Image (cartoon, rainbow, N blue to C red; front, side, top):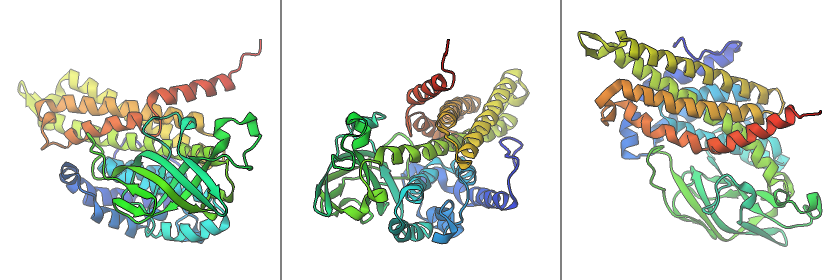
Length: 404
């Protein structure tokens, strides 16, 4: 066990879960991750192993067949999985956000119908807010849902769905204009949004009438996991698949889920940074220049000191954000800070490890090459660094309002 990024105050059960996941990562993920990533191959055997460990039900309540664990436990597991291969952590992240949305906001019928199968890994979740013409400006979405009796007809194009192909349940945010939202907040855009639970067949092409998943988007990194578009053209969804049973609550529901997602991205940044440090400190002791290991050169020791400090700081902020959410308190400030710091530090630690590797860091034979392509995704996933700073700044002005 590494000296860095330790978490104090864990229960025996939490420690056992995290230790089990770490062993799985060391034995089943790290040895094959780079080869699978270079082939852009979906890690089916790894996913099956995670299913056997019960990780798809980690945060789902025990009454629905899950383990009923906390966001902190989940985040620490994600940190370990991302340390092995960040793409695998993406596969479970979107699943957990949908499970969290159901747990927090779903009707009793929706929970009973979906959560047991999600806990077993039989139903795999994805969620969708973004569209081709917008990124973090969620209030500008154009996908629409029009009510016809007991059915909604969905039309629009969605973008950047992680697990878009392999998922069988997608939580989709659309614009609705119904009596449930009329007159609220003077017609504010965020009051006319609704989350729909869309069931579909896994795969690509026409996955149900009115719904098409065109294919995988080719990416610089974050390979193995499928990232897709989603086209809705007259997609009919029954009214009982409105999350929570009422329209007009989608924006708040999704933002609640995004807070969980931002803790997840912070955890991923921590995991990737840890692995980059491990690779860098090991290589620095093996590579010799001028008659001694490069680790004995002060310039390299300074890099290692900075890298380790960033790993430790990012982990502490991620843990704090997860614990705040678990306590039931508002954590958008802490989650934004953790996501911002962890993703930025991850990029810096990976680059320093890359520099320590010298020319070999540019070779596909070395693991750091993969990490160098993976780290940038964390700067934009679940809201860009600039969006995080906007959120942090606004919350700080709320907390420190000038009263003079």
